[in-house]
Length: 123
Image (cartoon, rainbow, N blue to C red):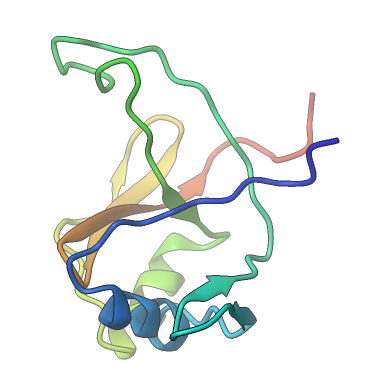
């Protein structure tokens, strides 16, 4: 049976991105599978399915994947991460599903950080 989900970032700066995930985002639990290749153990995960939008209005083209991080208190998390040197490229906005903003990681990887309005595990 399926036990979880594995995510992957592709970066032109993989060593720097691994260090960012470990040191800036605080993912301290990981397995080094050799040659500095770190597989991070994440605290929890969820998965959603969004309708595609070939015009780019409220979604991405079919076949697109997206990885984002979520938290319980977005403003407090942004302040904590900024204190660790993480740079955000936008203000916190209410996107309907939750409060959100974006930051960049080494290698030009841009990710969303959000605080969901929905309650997990209900349904």
